[in-house]
Every structure is written in structure tokens, then in C-alpha cells.
Amino acid sequence: MENLIEAIRRREARIVVVGLGYIGLPVACMFAKAGFQVAGIRRDSGKIAQINQGICPIEGKEPRLPELLAEVIRQGRLKATTDYKVCRKARVALIAVETPVDKTTKKPGYEALRATLQGLGQNLQAGTLVIIESTIAPRTMETVVKPILEEASGLKVNEDFYLSNCPERVMPGRLLANIENCSRVVGGMSPETAQAAVELYRCIVKADLDPTDCLTAELVKTVENTYRDVQIAFANEVAFLCESVGADVWEVRQLVNKSPQRDMHLPGPGVGGHCIPKDPWLLIHGTGDDFKARLIPTARAINDSMPLHMVELVEGALREVGKKVQGARIAVLGYAYKENTDDTRNSPTIPFVTRLEELGAEVAVHDPYVKGYNDELEKVVTGSDCVVVMAAHDQYRELNLRDLKTQLRIPVLVDGRNIFEKEKAQVAGFIYKGVGNVHFF
Image (cartoon, rainbow, N blue to C red; front, side):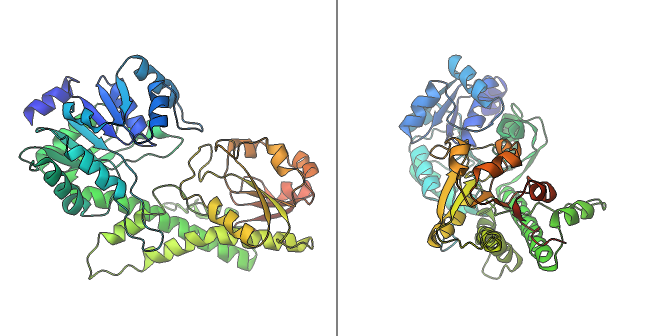
């Protein structure tokens, strides 16, 4: 352990990062920038070639990442590959692969994690520090990660190699800033391992690094995202309430949050991304048989219902102009789940579009950051009977409503992100509907 820590301090410890997506790629770049020699593993050979050319595969506005990737590739400090043999030279191995949940059973889908552990384990050398950055259910380190690595490698945790859990805390659009400035909880299979991982992350993280055990680290990550999911569900339920009584949820929220220690979240068309829709299920999965969750599944159900509620808003808006959804041409603005990114994982636009098409609508989708949907905006909206905002991309915020109206067949606007003011939309001649902002006085 002392040799490992000294190698980290001297930047002599070789690092391998398995998974070069939204988490692994910026982490690999940051450690390479800090002076480490880094190897990255990814299954997609096309993306590997792109990365090794210094071309960032992540689209959207991701400040500093494209330039940083090009820099560390040019310096020879980062090289991507599909071959797990590079793990044999590593003193530190970070795993950042997806950990989805099954859509039906809501149980963790650890196929990628298990395959990664097998590949790493077969090439694991004594004295290596293995860190899981992926979000996992409580007790996964003990019941899944540890036994697979020990069996595949023939080595023992805390004797031959070291095992840590340091869950990522990043968000698309702020990847590098989050890595640098967000505090991290650093779990270890032993206190010494946690301290060694703290030494490593101190090379790239400016915020607090809190050492603890692996179970606590697993809980902290899944609880924090579940907290956000529950808070968003509350905001969405208040939006339903405001629609029922004829109030504006956005004004209500603004005034609520003026009170000290109040932080009502944003309602919207649904919750997307890789973390929040699944982490509540990971948290519940890690509990014992004597625990029965009540609030968390209810919150999930509310947030999952929002894309279908958006369909109801579209139906209501078209009904006001005497038109049915069946046969209507509907332009959907935003396929990514988050503004100014290309991240479509669990995007609420997917079930929204699916339901519209089931009802017989002709749907055209636009998104400036998602390949296949980045056609000219005017071409997509021209001749539409309804425009629906599903992502708050800057391009949509800058739209001139009067110009937009001239391109439509029927001026109907359904705003799921509250990027347009109701009064301005009405003055421009639109039939306007928004989440929590439907009835007018």
C-alpha cells in the first residue's frame, strides 16, 4: 500500500479506465492532464479510433473536454483500446460502465459490470487498486464485485489487491467542472484503501473527499439521486394540482422558494438520463426483505407518467382548435433528456413520441445535438399543427415566436420546459399549454 501511494504521489502509477463514456472519458482525460499515463478501454472500435485521433465522441456543449482530449492524446498520455491486457501494467483500475435496471422487473442489469470485472480480473496484478465509479445498489461491492474479481484473478481483497467504491457525481454539460468541484464520497474495503483512493482523487478533485466504507458510499450515491427523483415528483404533482385549480405552478414555485430553506424543484415533461430514473430502483434493490418502500415507487410512477401527461396537453390544445391527434403533424423540439447535450438515455421524448404515433399522429423530431434529428429546424416545424418543447436547448430559447407562427399550419405550442412566457406566446397568436400552466383567467 505504501508503494502504491508513493507511486500515485509521484504520478508513476499507470491508470486504466474501463468505460469511456460520459463518466470514464473525462475522468481519463483529467488523470492524463494531471501527469498520469492512462489507458482507456471501450468495446466500440469506432469510438476507440475516434478517441485516439483526439476527436471527442460526446456531442453537445461540453466545455473544455474536446480541447483536453486532443491535448492529452497529442502528448501521448492517453491511449484507448479494446484489449484488457493493458490492465496488466496498471496500478490503478477505474470502472465506469453503465448499470441499468430492467424495465419490467426493475432489478439491476449488471451484464456490463460483470463482463468488465471478468476481463479485469483475468489481467489483474497484485498490488492494484480497483475503483468502481459506476452507480450500484447497496451491498453490490460485497456480493458482486468482490467475489467476481477474487475468482477471476485468484487474488484476495485487502491481501493481494485493494477495492474501493467512489461513485461519480457528474452531469452532461458540466462533466469536467463536476469532476473538479463536486465533493466525493470514497468508500474502501478497508480504511487504508479508502485513504489510498483519496490520495488518487486529490490529484484531480478540488472539493472535499470523504473516506468511508463501501456500503456507505453505495448508499450515499443512490440516496442522493433518489432524493432528487422524489423532489421532482413532488414538483410534478404540484403542477397537476395547479392545472386542476387553474393556477400557474411556475409562479407558485417562485414564491415558495422565497421562503427560507425551501427548494421546490422544476416540474417538467419527465425525468431522463442514466441516473435518476434507475437509481431509486437500485437503492430499493439493496435493502433487506423486511423493508417495503412506499414513497420511492410512487415518485417513480409520477415521473414516469409525465410524458403521457404531455400527450394529454397536446390533445387538449388541438381540441381547442377543433383537431384530433390522429392525422395531426406534430413537431417535437428536443430528443436529448437534458438541454445542450446529446444524451438521449431514458429521454422522456421517447415514450412521448411512441404514444403520439400510437394515436396516429405524424411526428417530426428535431434536436441540434442528436444525430438523425439535427436537420434544419425550419424544415422540421414547417406545416406542423403543433410544436412541443421537450428539451430547453439554447437554440429553442432564442426562437422568435412570431416567425415560428408563420411556419406552422396551426399555431399550437405545448411547452414542457417553460422556456416561453405564456403571455408572450398568446400575444404572438399561439394556443399555449404548459406543464402546470394550462388554465387561463
